[in-house]
Length: 244
Image (cartoon, rainbow, N blue to C red; front, top):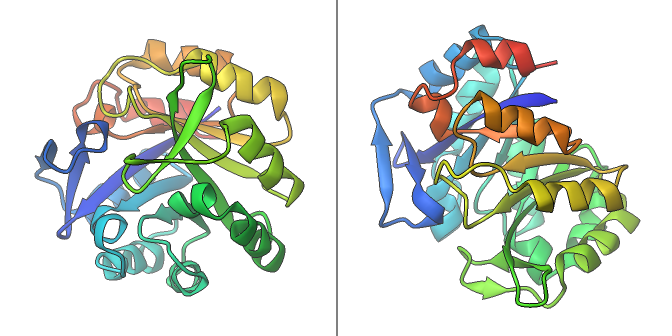
C-alpha cells in the first residue's frame, strides 16, 4: 500500500476541513510548497492536492501554487477541486499534474466522465467519490459539497465508470473525513472485492499507524493521509515505510 500525503489549499494556505464543512476549517502555519517539499524529502512519490477555493467557487484559484509544486519539485501530483469542464482537466494537466481528480461530475454526469476517460486515458483521471451510507446498507455518492445525492448507488456508478476504463478511484466516507475515527474498512473491503482491477485510494479517518495497517488489510492500493501528518499523529517516517 502506498501512503499519499494530502495538502488542502484555501486562500493560498494549508487547511483542513472537518467533514468537508468550510465553517469548520483548521488553518496550519505551513507554506504549501515547503510542505510538499517536506513530504517529497520524506520519501513520498505522489502527493494529493485539493484546491478548496475552486471546489467551492469554480475556476483555478490555487492553480499557480499547484503549478509551482509540479515544476519546482520532482514529486508526482494528483489534484482536484473545481473540475467542471474538460478545460479544467486540461489546465491542471498542462500545469504539470499527473492525474486530475473528478468528483461531483462523476456523480452528476458519469457519461461525460466516461468520454474523458476515453479521450485522455485512464491514467489521467481519478474518480473522487465521497459517499454516505443509506438505509438499505449501501452507499450513496454525494456531489456539490455533499449536499446533493447521486442517482446511482456506488456500485452501479463504479460499474459504469469501470466499463469506460476507470483505473483510479479515490473514495471517502464523509462521516469519517477529518475526524480521526479510523478508516471505513467495510466500505473499502467491499470495493476491493467487487472491483479488483481498480486501484483504490482510501481516504478519511486515518489517525495513527494502526489505522494504516487496518486500511492495508482491506487490499487498497493507497491511503490518503492529510490531517494526521500535519498534526504528527502519523510520523514522516511512515511515508517512506508505506511509499512504494
